[in-house]
Image (cartoon, rainbow, N blue to C red; front, side, top):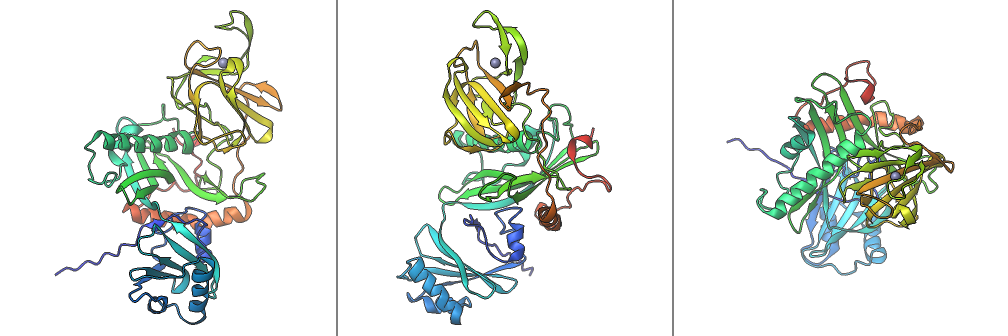
Length: 453
Ligand SMILES: [Zn+2]
C-alpha cells in the first residue's frame, strides 16, 4: 500500500506587527509578509490542547519549560491579561531550525490569538493579540496568453476555492470572479508592468504570465479574494522576459522610517518610473496641452494647461505617482478635483470627477496607481473626461513631454539583501509552480522594455 503523508500547515495568519522570527526571516520579510509557505522548510509548529484548564501541562507538551515558561506565563497573564484558561484552549510553539521563536495561545472560540515573539535566548521581545479575521496565503499560477491577457487570467488564474462550492454558479459568484480578475489585471498591467510592457502592442498568442499571488481566505464565508501580486514574470513567445520582484524598503525622503513594498528588476532597478503615463486605465486624448485653444464651454480661446482623457463615466482615476493629497473638493470649473503633491517639486491635478474614492482626505498619502476618484463631467465640461494637469515648482508643464526623473534603484545593504534572497524566492516559487521558472538569457540585465520586441 502506498502511503502518502501530506502535512498541511495552518494557513498563515496576517503578521502585524511584522514577524520577528530569526534573522533570515526578518530579511525574507523584505520580500513578502505571507512567509508561511516559503518558510515551510525551516519552520515547525508544535501544538497542544489545554485539557485540564491549566497552562503548565500544555506548555510543557510543546517544549516550553524553565525560565522560558515563566517568562511566557508572565507576559500572557500580566501584559496580555489572559488570566483564565479553559479546556479546549490551544498553545502553539513555533520553531525555526529547532529554536523556539514564537509562542501562540489561542483561546477557544475567540477570533484571534495571543502571540509572543522570542529572542534567540528565549526571552519575550514583543507580544500582542492578533485578530484572526482573514488568512493570507500564497499561490503560484502560470497562464498561457490566448487572445488577451484578460482572457488568460480569467481562464488560468482564478483559484479553485474562490467560492465555497468551488464553482462559479450564481450571479454573486461571477461578480466575485470578475472582481478578482479585474484587480489582478489592474495590478499586472497598470501597476507592475505599466512601463515595461505595452499591453496594446507587445502581447502575442503563446506568451506566458507567471505569477506569485497573495490571496485572502475568509474563514467565515469560505471565499477567497485577491490581495496582491507578490512577484511576476512575463515571458514573450518571441523571446524576452520582463520580471518584477518585491522588496520592502524605506523610501527616500521618508521621515519616520516606515517601509513600503516596491517592485524591482533583477538588477535592483525600480520597476516604476515616477509617474504613470496617464491617470486612467484606457482613455482617448480629446484635448492636448496647448498655450491657446477654443474652450468648448466658454467659447473663447485660452490656454489648456493639461491633457483631457475621455473615458466612460465611472472609470477609475489613478494617482500617477506617490504623494500627498493637497486638495479634494469642488473647485469651480474643474468640478470635483484632487490635487497631489509629489517629490521633486511636482504636483498633479485631476478634474471633473463624478466622485472621490472612499477612505481618503486632504493629507492622505497615496501610492502610484491608487484609485483617487472616478471619471465624471462636473464643473465646466461637455462630457465625461478627466482633465489631468501637472506642475513643476508651481508652473504648468506638459505631462506628455516632461522628462520625468526615474525612481531610485536599490543600492548598498538593501541591494545586497535583495540579491541574497532573490534565489530563495525563485526557488520557493518554482516549487510552488511545480516547474522551473523562465530565467533571463545570460548577460541580459532584465530591465524589460528595452530588451524585448
Ligand atoms: Zn482639460
